[in-house]
Length: 417
Image 1: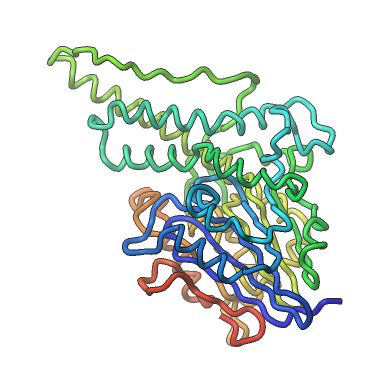
Image 2: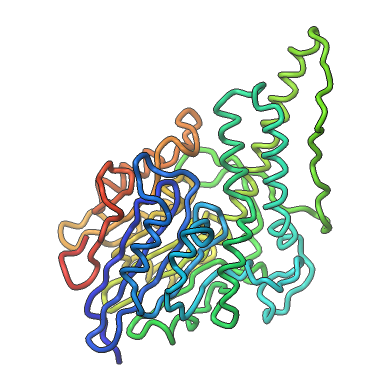
């Protein structure tokens, strides 16, 4: 059996997004690399371009076998798989591409799971198919009266609308690997085995609708969230069918002066409704995230993408999985440190949290001031969570003001963290 002798994760300073390169060295044979997400919605000030990051990834990987992982299709996770940065990655020796089952190109819109899972009618796939176009329509409509909106409201609509666009080029590029692509659901652990000798990979999510019907449900409050109230509404519809496009008129219609006060307030109310819809779409897409655990001996590394509570609930409902997660030694903080991606019960269960020796190592890829609101206690990264990470783990974060392309975190073969 192949022996892993070294392991390093590079957390690139990409801004508001994720880009992690896990590199595994072996006693015999070439190293193996796993690129987990590559995208952003906001670049850091004076930070590297995505092309510079891609060039460094290509340098590190050389001719070694590489696995690409796109945990879900939000822009801040896949935009680097397009444009000039994708060109810089063209020489990679890609042996496998892992994506969630919801990204399978030929999956019908009413599927409850992958093509081999006996899918039947359901509105979940319809909602996922439509959300990118709807997000773009809402963003364009809000842009048409942006000057009448509070800046914070307009900025959040712009951010969520942009992040939830289809990212068509990145999706096409990832799908271009054909038979080397795997569209995974919870339990598809064997998918990585041929490509990562000496490593056990557990796929904890996303579940299919048949595995866990709760994945398509939303609630107004939940004890697992990192704040007191979760703002969400249903992202699914009772009936299937395409959404009609939202129309933005090209011509300006004069509004009488005495009516403009009322117009501004109507537009602000409409924008609040749009924001509520976009938040629901955002959470629904986050719940399609792959949740991956890499195991090498006593070492265990958790990469949950942007998975939120409906996705996490499936994994945490199984006692054996909960017991396994307690042994986590490295945690990629979910959703850039947001309020709803790190269940408090999961965090409290980590055995190495607060340990004097062998303390839990955490990695937070984020950028302040991009998403959420301090007033609503939804700021990203969430202060309460960051305090816990700082005091109870060895925390690495991309927005710490340090120079360089990335943080190199030694997991095996050196001083941990």
